[in-house]
Length: 247
Image (cartoon, rainbow, N blue to C red; front, side, top):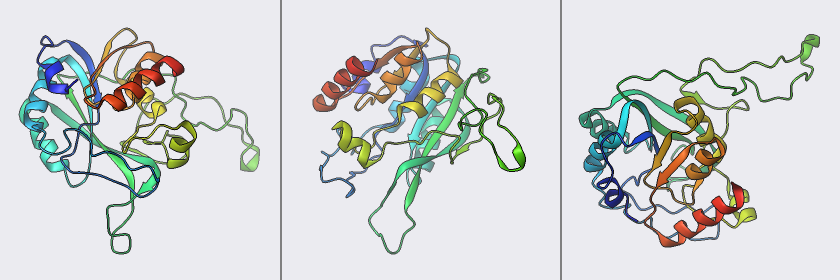
């Protein structure tokens, strides 16, 4: 089902949180797996301005929204979301699970991060979570004999790199092992963190471009309700299969 078709049937303020990776308006392939991805449906010619307006309309008051983006699309997406009414708070930068390329492997820096525009409708504070400040095993010895105590994060940086944060995407090894292929497949753990920070159990999470279902799995595992759309029938079937097997 097309995202815009679903959104126009939703009432105002129908969803509690938006977490989505919409098309960037450019065809994408990578060379890190032998599996050749189809050009993403809607990747060329999507009306992002209309999508931004509809996203604002269907989101509840005092709620959070996360939109994945990229450096060369960021300014356009930013303006569309701002003009729709969103209060843009941050651009988050999350470490990828694998390094990506953008064509010029010898004259360009490798793309090792995902960008997310974090915005609000109204204002909502972050939840107190049980996300660990340090993911190393509790009690592990460090230099000078100090031990790690169990502490929960109370403040989050906008740049998530290193061992204490989940990666943004799965690498090609994970895709081959699980036989799940998608050019922009997101890490369920990352999405689960964002959902726990920005919503409560029982609230409705929306992803209009659900791909192979990572956001749906993250929502269900954290005891949220989920609503999403995916226009590609193959990816939709993969998402259903993953949800049945992983939730």
